[in-house]
Image (cartoon, rainbow, N blue to C red; front, top):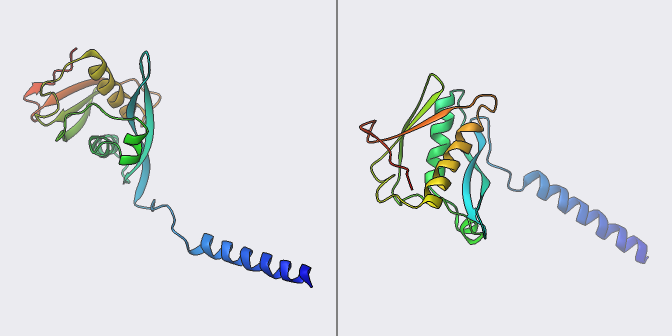
Length: 162
């Protein structure tokens, strides 16, 4: 009799597990969305490490569109959980990405004026540039792109110097 009760319990647990799998929450990636990586930075004792984090963007076939949407996710910054794990971006609060353009293997990324306001420090500058490079590179691993960062709809080049 006790084996029969165990068997019924096992069947019930299996049924509950199957129902939870079938009807439980799923990843929100749909046909109109895709997963991309944004990169944040975690300081180490002697350097920094780039930490890839998944985000969702609207699906597009355009290189510029993918880079723009991913950078827009990046400027939102890490989640509270990610911050607790020690990652950050080094960006000024309020930074926005205006546009992305590809011309002759040069990716021109335009930001608002907040992007390079009071920008300084070699660690911070290298971290920001490294994050941008990794975001761009994920969409075409076979091509090396030069980055040109501008501010204010191309009014001037962004100042990312230590």
